[in-house]
Amino acid sequence: MPFAPRALARRAPAPEDRLQDPISKESTVMALIYTETEQERASVAEAPDERRDWLALGVGLVALVAILAVALSVAAIATRSSDSGGASAAAAPAAPATAAVDPADAPAPTLAQAKGVSFEPYHVVDPTLPAVPAGAVKRFTVDVDQHVVQVAAALAPTEAWTYTVNGKGYPGTAASPPIVVNEGDRVQIRFVNGDSKAMHVSMAHSIDFHAAEVAPNRYYKDIAPGQSETISFVAKHPGVFMYHCATQPVLMHVGAGMAGMMVVRPKGLAPVDKELWVTQGEYYLGKPGAPTNMAKLAAEKPDVVAFNGYADQYKYHPIAVRRGERIRMWVLNEGPSKWSAFHVIGTVFDTAVVENTAFHDSQTLSLAPSQGGYAEFTLDQQGNYPFVTHAFGDMVKGAAGMLHTEGAPAIPPPADGQPGHDHALDH
Ligand SMILES: [Cu+2]
Image (cartoon, rainbow, N blue to C red; front, side, top):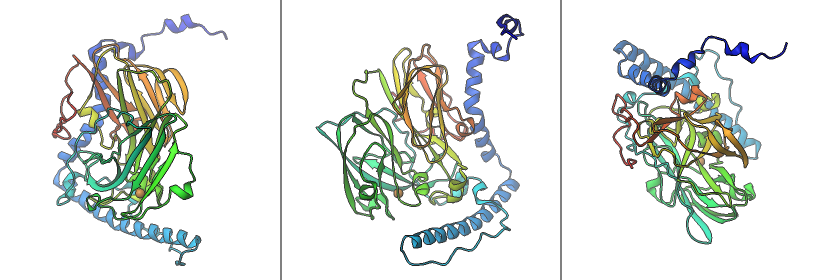
């Protein structure tokens, strides 16, 4: 039967046609990114005492099971080590079949349940892409910081393991700084695992550059606390590359925050008005103040999915842009396990480049874990333009932000006042 477009044209208006009024459309878009987390905040703030008691009991049970799971995973690691010539270890016993609560399903502990745990205060992460450093050889000193931070305002703090670059890090978040060079540059990285006691490094770490072509066994090796190594390579390939810790268990080290973006700017890349960087990462919370949760990591059940190491930070600290200016957003999905569908609501990417493949007239960057790319676009009208992962189950866990042009309505602060106290990004 031939296709009959006129028959389709006579249908009743689709529901979305009723959203042509700009105010009701804006309300719909805002509700899309606000509703879920506001409900979560409200349910935490208004939980009756009886529910809190059950929560406390549940957390206690979960903690017991988690301790058991950690013991089992340590035993499993010891067993694997013995395979490569280490001391032999007894096989781990099978997990008991009677466990009442799967530790991968434990609710994230709330800030209220983290009494007595001190942590760094949050500061919004500046998303302005740094410049390429001067000099013929691009030198970077990369260090490790083990620090207790929040990754979401309503949730308990966690011990994040992150990188600093040339002394710069992002206190109060799980973000690591971008490293930016030009295609063809010689790059020299001095990696030091805890240059001072202030970094609180307690274990071996390492660094693996996806932009480099070097022997992994020589350079992506474990570096003991206080030790260092130097990695030198030519950034031959343009793109957005991941760098990350490769120390075992790598799932745990990346899940704890040990990942960042390396931008290798393509030769001949045209200038734009504004360049921004965004990483998407998942966070899996264990006990308040403790490192990441292996059971949740293995089950790929994150509590938080965030841009630049802190849930919803650019919803409440919108990124100031101008109508009509050309914007380039550099995006990396550092995972460790979820795909990212990076989308800016209210515009279309004129150009999008992923893995050195160019797309035109593109709506979404599709980024597997470790993949990065960039999107170029302009915003045709004054307004508030959310950017999200269009994997909405992850968006509602904190992977949402806002581009805010001049003349657009102000973004209301969150109901509980967090994370609304830091205005370092007002510009
Ligand atoms: Cu590490």
